[in-house]
Length: 189
Image (cartoon, rainbow, N blue to C red; front, side):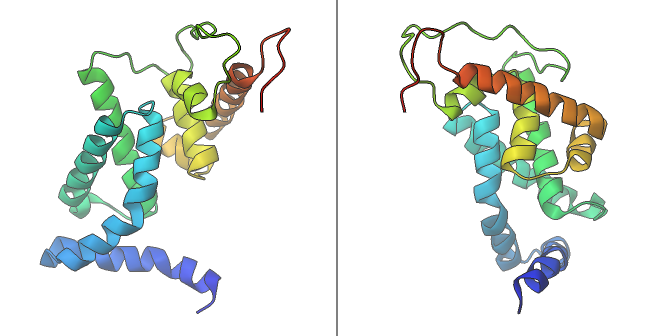
């Protein structure tokens, strides 16, 4: 089977597997979906939560529980992957609220923390991502890391595709400023 045929067949395979889970309680079908999507889902959640392993594991498990419970309501207008990421995003929002953190509207953001205590220390990408306001971080992760289109991001976040593009641009600019060397210091590679 050619690669393009395999890619085109995946949504159909997902639907068949999901139907087997929903109607028959088929554990093998669930394991197949779980193995297919959990690694990427975990990476997304881990980054969105700023690198907290324990919370990421909890959110991924909560995502799968909600997904299995909601299989009957899933209309297949989006891909299974997009739907799972939307559930994970909502679980992350719930965790932020639960921990009394502010889940910010995309247009708003807290001031970015100042330079680290060690001004010569090189900030890596994961640390820089964790320092972005949650709204910017979410759009960057969904678009640049997970590969979602602006239309898909808009559906997941309840914003327009143009707002997604704008937030991506602003988030990237802020990310570059966090990764840029301070004036008078050369970047260490």
